[in-house]
Image (cartoon, rainbow, N blue to C red; front, side, top):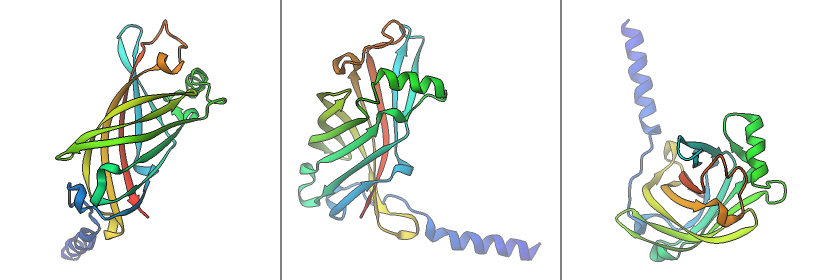
Length: 198
């Protein structure tokens, strides 16, 4: 029993350095460089009212890519590009996934792209405004974003930055009008993303 307890304590002691947490929420203290989205720690959800509001039906997009170049001396000038594969929409039902992707005309417009044009904020909260290209239409969109912090990655390797955010678009403004009798026009977007310094 003592041997087992000693082994558990040793394992915990060895595991402690592997823990990684944000060490700063000050953008000015984040190292400069090129940052790329970590797709394993990125999620984009879209919620849309179903039949006048019985529920806010939730979809997830499974394939995201993104990057930005960061300069802490001029963090407000940061420009981020995010790309989402329209056909990667996941409702939990494969047949319905294809139906939703059909509304997006994913074969013709395979990529949804957001390119920021302005970043502002303070105390870890702010807005990111940019051009969203969806279904072949480009419109300005503003996202409310929280900077969750920056710090070392697992085992202290590299630098990682995390963000959470929300936004809202009207699908009709992007020409996505299928199933209007079953779902609303407002689409709420929610995302959780982490970027890693390269």
